[in-house]
Image (spheres, rainbow, N blue to C red):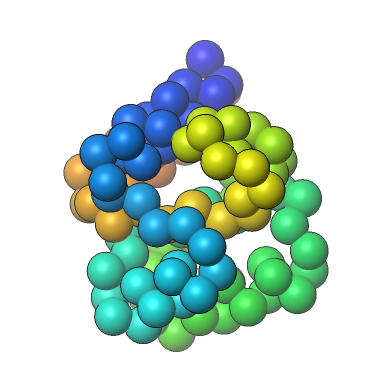
Length: 104
């Protein structure tokens, strides 16, 4: 059950509702298109700080997810440290799944 949110991330990616790549994510944050940002728990301190600061400024929720390998595997790409979710429905579902995981 722990990684069920990763299945939802994979669905969002296949539906075209994700943003990947540092520049694309930052552009989408600035244009208020992102509803949620998931950062790998093994992302570098500089990367994490950059994304968290930008998301805080633009009021985009941020969660720390699994490691980069798990996040990358969920969307079928390699070496991804952050995934932006552009759809509010997917963002709410993923957030609630992560909340349940952290409580349980």
